[in-house]
Image (tube, rainbow, N blue to C red):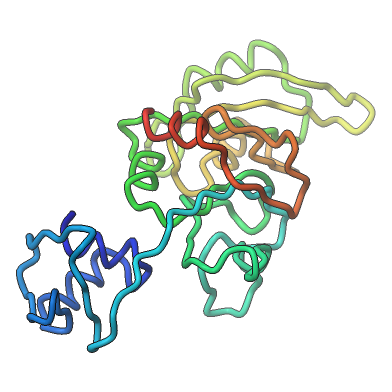
Length: 238
C-alpha cells in the first residue's frame, strides 16, 4: 500500500494532505524519514508522524439515516450540527467521514466510513451507483411530464441532467403536490432540486431512500447501523 494511502486510512489526514506531510519530511517508516510519494508499506512496517507511532484503524462502515438540519461534513466552520454528532463516540472510536454529501435540508441515507477505496468506488461517476430519492414537489406532475424529466433536464448553464428513473408515487390534489421517486447515478450539488426546479415543480421535501442495494429499512431517522459483510462486499464489487 502506498504510504499516503496508509496515512489517510489511519485517520492522520486526507490523502492529499498526507502527501504534503511526506514531501515535507514529517513521516518516518521504521525510523527512517521517507519523502518519496510512491513509497510502499506493508502491515508490518511501523509508520511515525511527528515521532509518534501511527496506529492503523480497523475499517468501519456505517449507514446513517440523516435528519434535516445536519451538514454532511466532519466539521463546520459555521458551527452547525454535522452527521458525526449523530454517532455515539463510545461506539465508534475510529476517524470516519461521510461518503458524498446530503444537503442540510435533505434527509435520508448516507454512508460513513474510513475506507478510502470504497469512498472512491461509491463517488466516482464511472461506477454509476444508484441513489434513489423521494421528492415532494409543488404542483401536479402528469405522466407525460415525468417522462420528459426522465429524458433529461438542462441545469447549471447547459448541463443536461438525465435521471436513471422518474416515477409518480402519489398525487395530492387537495394541496396540489406530487410525491416523486427519482433515481440518479451522479452526485452533482443539489441536482434533484435543480432538476425539479427546472421542470417547474420546486421541491418541498427531499429524502434519499436508497444507495445501491441499501435502504432505510431498519434504520430510523437519526439512527445508524453497521453494514453487514455481504453488503460491504456488494458495494466493493460495484
